[in-house]
Image (cartoon, rainbow, N blue to C red; front, side, top):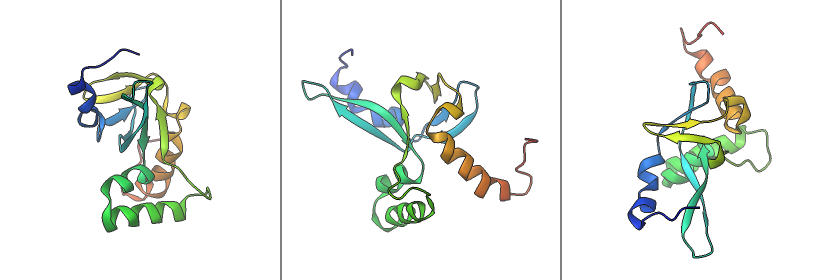
Length: 132
């Protein structure tokens, strides 16, 4: 791991949060809603994974709206104790105006979120079908 200057790692939220996530086929499918951090031996933080979906954005929003989003998501989620969709940083190929992955959508944990949203929300919008 290379050591970043303090100003670089403090700006990681600004550089990643709310960016579009694009799979290796150029297909946009999620936004970066939160980040999972870990700490090295010297106590410096680094990003381990990108978190996506309602389970990640709710806590970031906080207050009533955030709690409501998480409660609805948890209620509708098939898992007893769901966790946000997690994309490890090892799957990130590059970061520019978007977060570009080195893997296709179906190889990520966020695929389930993308498919669920498409099936339950996007498909209900008139004209939303893309001939798939």
